[in-house]
Image (cartoon, rainbow, N blue to C red; front, side):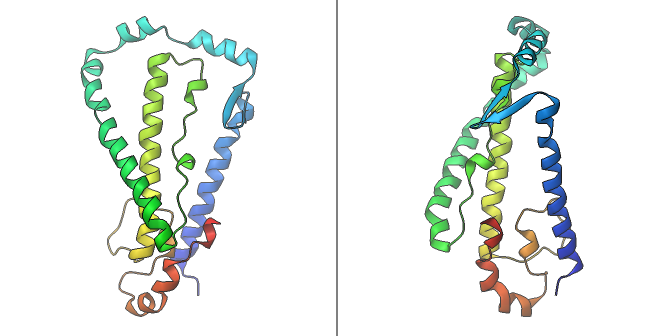
Length: 195
């Protein structure tokens, strides 16, 4: 029997897909298309974009001093990020086949495409690549953790949580011992929606 929570979670997932589809419609509005993972703009758009590019020297001289001084603290985070990326990727490579969990495709989460925007200068492109990596890495980590949690502890929380990960709707209700014991082995291997 489908619960109201499962119905709502299914609606949430469908709405998320609809939002992503709507965002993709911008290809037509801003005159670009994606070919072989590369973003291609129409030539007249590239010319227009270059008119909006802020010169590197002007970009640096216009930057508030507090932004310049804080930059090393932003960029030092790249070290633990790379270490986490390597660690979680190694974990997935070794453990997921053992548990029968489908692997998370890194390229579905860590996307670099802002370098094609001609209205960004070199520093802006570099910063955009960093943000794309950091946010994509966190989404990649969350999906790996979600699949791991589904395998090891597929129980919903009693307390309210801020966000739900992609596997949460498959979890057993908090306190439902009978369903947990009877369904845990089925839930651990229920990844057919990822195929």
